[in-house]
Image (cartoon, rainbow, N blue to C red; front, side, top):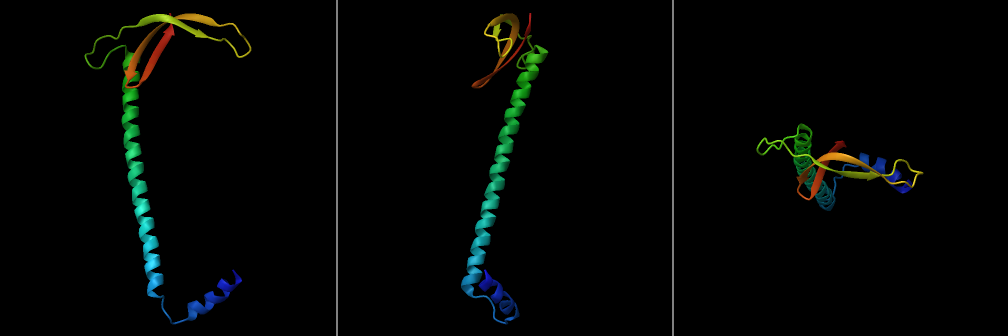
Length: 118
């Protein structure tokens, strides 16, 4: 490190220019950095677009569940009845069951369900 620092003032005072090899290497490094930055921006834009589409689909399905209608034909979505099981608290071993009404909406491979106590 000491050697580099001792050469810096001499290099700054020198009238000699950079060699062609040094210029080409610096241009290559700059070009690679710019290509990496451009690809990073492209990937980020694609990810944002896909996530916005997915969130729009999710919110649309959630709105259909809460408004009790199906957006395709405006028909009232049927509510189903069933039981939901749960453990009341962490220390208890008793498994409890509650009767509920629920609506389900498919989001491709995933499913969103809204339910309430009967």
